[in-house]
Image (tube, rainbow, N blue to C red):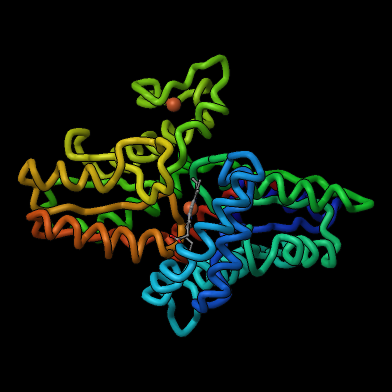
Length: 354
Ligand SMILES: C=CC1=C(C)c2cc3[nH]c(cc4nc(cc5[nH]c(cc1n2)c(C)c5CCC(=O)O)C(CCC(=O)O)=C4C)c(C)c3C=C
Ligand SMILES: [Fe+2]
Ligand SMILES: [Fe+2]
């Protein structure tokens, strides 16, 4: 059997050829050697959508400060994260691909993975699909909330590569999936398992940060001002990263029955001196400790796979900070990785876009 959309899709695809699915995550170094981390940071941070300052300033920042000083520190952090299978971001993406293949009809779908920076490259992922003679490509950047620095950069790279092809198949992008019921259910299942038998004082949602100007540049008619406007989510701020994060929190809380006053939003990992979206996670942690909050459960729903930002930053550095400031318990909800409801969600998104 199968859902109505599955049956319709099958009928359609039998006539019009295979559909390629490209799952793209951010990227990770090839190894924890400082040279590999430097190579990764250079490629990542030279992307104009990530550090959106004039080329010469970006070049100087990366080559005179980040490459010599940050790369060795980052390599040290990556060593805490690395496993026998390498970087979690990469192997969770591989596992997601393998679980997805098990759920899709391989006569009709070809699935490939790519990283926006380093390997496997978007070029190699698209080439894999092209060699399978796909007539349509669905690109899923694995970022629940749209940001120019993440999803936008993947879109730009895919379009740049495909623009050199003689035949450009239909390409569709899934640019935001925060409201997908199975995405929310996947987080709710993860959260429920952590909350069972526990009584947390606060549920903290820490999202990857972003320079404020990147959001303001995308604001149509000046609607988005990074204030109370982000508390509502609709057509006018559909692509506002801050509003999408707040909406993600609201919807996960709804599913879990978490009252509004118990949830706290914040943004982690800011870099440099320019203002990033607020509130900042480290400042929120200090405030919570001052208020006498003792037990915190942290979600990190800007990521669908555990990575440096979740395992080392949220479960490591932020936990230490909270405990040093007087907190007693700090737990992190594991990311979705290749957990079944999340794989089902990806399958549904593929079928909906086929
Ligand atoms: C100037 C900086 C950065 C912007 C803008 C940015 C946006 C952004 N990043 C992610 C997802 C991830 N970022 C990760 C690591 C990471 N991010 C930055 C900087 C910016 N990110 C740096 C310098 C690093 C490297 C880590 C370090 O050296 O401190 C990761 C983890 C990668 C891993 O291998 O585990 C992810 C994932 C999103 C979604 C995003 C925009 C919303
Ligand atoms: Fe990042
Ligand atoms: Fe906004």
